Structures are given as C-alpha cells and as structure tokens.
Length: 150
Image (cartoon, rainbow, N blue to C red):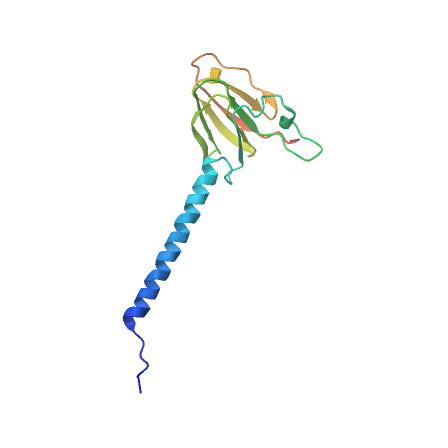
C-alpha cells in the first residue's frame, strides 16, 4: 500500500505559481490605470477632448437641461505647442505637459492653480467666461475658483 505524503516541492511550486499570477494581474491593473490616465479619463476630474472636437463657446461650456456642468477651467491649445501646468492647490498635479494644437482639457475641481508657459497659445475659459488672451511669450500664473452657481 502506498503512503500518502505531501510533496513539499509541489506545494512550493503551487504557491510560487499563485504569486506569479497575482503579480501579473497587478501589473495588468496598473497598466490599465496608466492607460486610462493617459487617455484623459482618470479620477482627477479632468475630461480630455480630442483635437478639434469643439471650440470655446460651444454649448458644452454651459449647463444644459441634461445636467452638464460648466468646467471650473477649460484650456484649448491654439498653437503647435502649449505648455500648461494645472494642479489642485497643495495637492495633485493634474497636468504638466505641452498640449498640441486643438487639444482641450476641462477641470471641475473647486479650486485650481494654473500656469501657462505662453499665454498667447491657449484660450482659457474660467467658469465658462473667456479669460483675456496673454501676450506672445508671456508666462501667466493664476488661481481659478469654481463659481458657486455652477
């Protein structure tokens, strides 16, 4: 009659395979999150539009009967390269890169710090109202606070 004995090497292999599978699933999850962030659908509250999808002043900037909100800040790049930095004061950096012509970004947080590397290259809407354009090469730094009625 055969003895029933656990093979310690077999159990170790099963545990190792389980750990490798868990690691692979974690890497897939991290990759998916990174991809979603890169595509502009992260949890930070930004909505990235495709180049040329809409222009400043479109009905999408104002509340509609369907309940859409006006963005606290909306930035539209009108040059080949638009250096933009947006963050929650004292918190997360939402954007720190060069936007490309026609690219847009909208943020809905209650308060935002914005830095435009060249204020003449972008159109900025604060709570749906267009900010005066900057001079060529002018760096602008400003804070935007969400309007209470938006």
